[in-house]
Every structure is written in C-alpha cells, then in structure tokens.
Length: 319
Image (tube, rainbow, N blue to C red; front, side):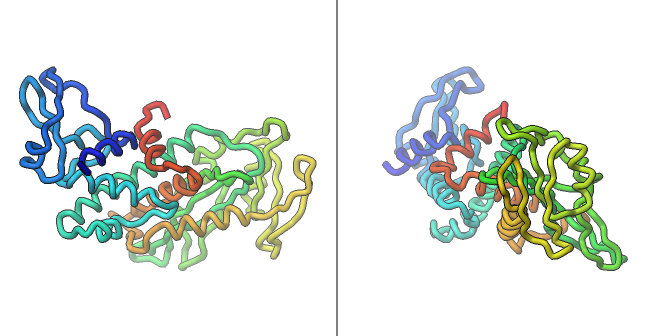
C-alpha cells in the first residue's frame, strides 16, 4: 500500500522513528489498514497492547502531527529537499492539489523544516574553526525608519568565506543606526568583537602558515587582524580597487571579495519579499531563519540526500 511505503521512506529519512514504550509501560503494535482508515483516511496508527490507546505514527517524529495522509508527508519532504533552491509551502501545496485547512498544514510543516535547516546551519558553524584564505565582509540585510525621526536602523551581518570551499560563517552584528536617512555604516571592530568570529578563527593554518583575511579595506581590519594575529590583504573599494595581486603562502593570489559578495547576493535573494522587516518594533526574527536556511542549503549543494542529513544534524544532541 502507498501509505506503508511512505512510512518506510519516512523511517529511512530519519525524520520518523519507531515507538518505544507507552506511558503506561505497554508496547505498541501496528494497527490494520482497515482500522487506520476508520480513524483517519490515509493515516497510520499504533495501538498500545495494554491500555489500548491509539497513537498516530507521526507522534514519533520530529515533524508536526497533522490530519494528513502519510503519503502527503513524504511527498512534501521530497519536494522540499529536491533542489538547492527551497520551494515555498504554497507551491508544494499546489502540486499536491490541496487548499484550505490542508494548505495551512503545509505552511506549518514548512515552518518546522525551515527552522530545522536554520538550526543545522548554526550547529555546524558553532562546531568548527576557520583558517586558510578567508574573504570577509559585512552587509546590510534590511532597514527601517525609527518612529518620529530621520534615523535609519540597519540589520547587518558579517561573513567569512573560506576560499576553495563551500564553508561560510555568518554572524549577526548589533543593529546600527544612521542619522538623516544616511548610508549604512561599515562593519566595525567593536561590533565584530561581540560575535563569535574572533573565537572561531585560528591564527595558523596547518601546512600553510598564518591565516589570511582578505577584505575590502574597511578600517575595522586594521585593528582586527593584529588582534587575531593573522595576515591581512585588501583591495580598497573606496579607492576603486576591486582586484589586486599579492603573494600569500608563497603563491601569487588574487585579492578580491568577489566570493563573499556573490554569497551576499544569493543570501538576500533567499529571503522572500513577503517577509516583513519589522515585528514588535524590531527586526523580524524570521529574516534570520531564512538566512541560516540559505547557509545550510548553500553549503550542502552537492549533498545527495539533504533530507536525511538535515534530520540527522537537527536531531543530534551533541552537535
């Protein structure tokens, strides 16, 4: 039956697991298809052999328990993780041919998966160090006008991209204000210092020598690099320099921030325009979730089973 097959696929994906003991101490047993269908079309249930209570199989999962046929769960997961670009819940709902309450359930499931991806990105970043050639840069994500003033408040991120890899670290900077509708201020040493960046950078790169930061020449790096005891090379955008050449680790190396600049462009494009900038007077926390979700997908573009990997990292307690 399609439902049984979908359940096996969900078990293999690691989002769902077989039940342990019931609260009463009894064991769960599978329920016949006829009984399952009478309780909810297309859903599967377990029944405790002692207290005879029924439990939806999705009670034993990292996913929300919805009044959905189980095949809908598997179809949704397949579409969600099909490509590096994440589809919207509404797009998947249209493919499934559902609307109304079922479409609301799709949005709920999509929110759970989105937050799972964001947590996976954060867990992975927190567990590793940075070294080698690192392109570093800051950017503004969103802005809004402070009520009753001409001051713009900017949401800004600082990023470090390890050249030659799909390893990028993203750090939310403290919000920055600019008076008289001014331009966003550049990243500063004081604000970078408040992130985990300085703790995660290794001064030495095994087999090469000192770690090197490649920047756009912002003043912050004049103090940041000596503090970290790393090399620094820059192409000063303010002077019209976008590509320079320098010897780093004994090799002639292009000095530019094109890699991290491209990442910022992709990152911002991954935030739907429909996501509001403000929430309760400050920046909408959903923006951070979309940024982390993009980070997770971009780093795992070549992963052949992102669905399973996401579940494993999401549920891993020691990550």
